[in-house]
Amino acid sequence: MKIDVLSLFPEMFEGVLGSSILKKAQEKGAVHYKVTNFRDYADNKHQTVDDYPYGGGAGMVLKPQPIFDAVESLTGQADKKPRVVLLCPQGERYTQKKAEELAQEDHLVFICGHYEGYDERIREHLVTDEISIGDYVLTGGELGAMVIIDSVVRLLPGVLGNEDSPIMDSHSSGLLEHPHYTRPADFRGMKVPDALLSGNHKRIDEWRMKESLRRTWHRRPDMLKNYSIDEAEAKLLEEIKKEQ
Image 1 (cartoon, one colour):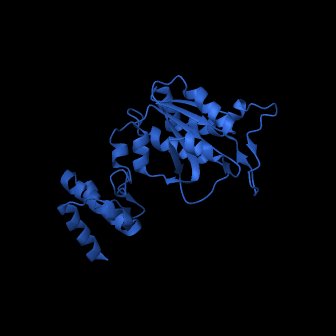
Image 2 (image 1 turned 30 degrees about the vertical axis):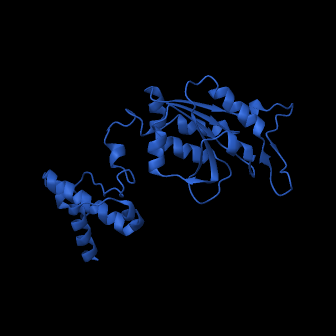
Image 3 (image 1 turned 60 degrees about the horizontal axis):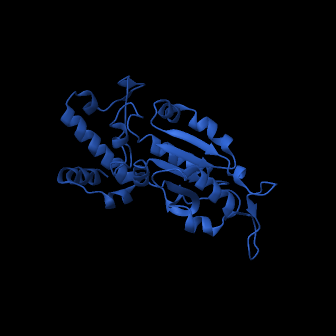
């Protein structure tokens, strides 16, 4: 996968893209990152990328020209049109399902804005997706782009050591993930559940499913509305409800 990022503050990405799984993914050849300062594409001598909004009002608005030219320069030779993602509080709320969708693409372009907003022509004629990572406002789109890049890259083949890891993640299965334990089996009197020490894989799988259902029921009951529950899971859920 190729990932391009347009930002006025490219230095913000150095630590994130150069560390941990994201760094290893590039070293493995699973992904290539390029962060571009779209100020370099401004066509005026002062390299200004924003201007006052027509009609008045507070704040400054990002001009279309530098962003259009930057995207066209980065994608002009592409065989297939990339997904161009605008980070925006007005966009669709980001989900694991969206991460899985974006992970199927060959080329992603992220536009990170600042100031009051974008010229509307950027939304209407340049981008393919508008995404918000939550119902709050940040000073710019950089942190949102980092979140999305991290969630997408970890889904690429060969990036994680265990190929089952992304499948079992919270939200990927439709439920929150079950609790995890490691050694020692008894830490200060706090013991690992017997089922996990039993060596009985059927018992372990049932425990994990029940605890996943329990955690989802307690913390995110709304997720169960969209989850296709089977007969065995329905029985476990009824047991959980009766335990309350």
